[in-house]
Image (tube, rainbow, N blue to C red; front, side, top):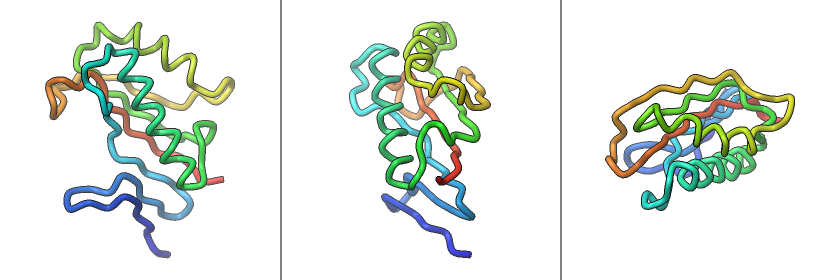
Length: 116
């Protein structure tokens, strides 16, 4: 069984699919000047777009890892997350504080999902 890769760059692919499982690279905001709410909305929009491109959606998320620059932002991030997550399909999730690659990023999200 072959591996499909999308948006392949010299360092990483945004998406890989193997055996009907979709693996997304860490998704980051485009506009790092936004608040945690704005950055979270941007990142979740990337997740939606990439999952759709791979034949999946947020109801099919198997696992989610959220990295926050500052864990004290979790309540504000959760407000956006709770409005986005599919009712009745909340995935297993871990949220941790981490030093992100760009000091302006407040959030990075990694998702694994099943294809439809």
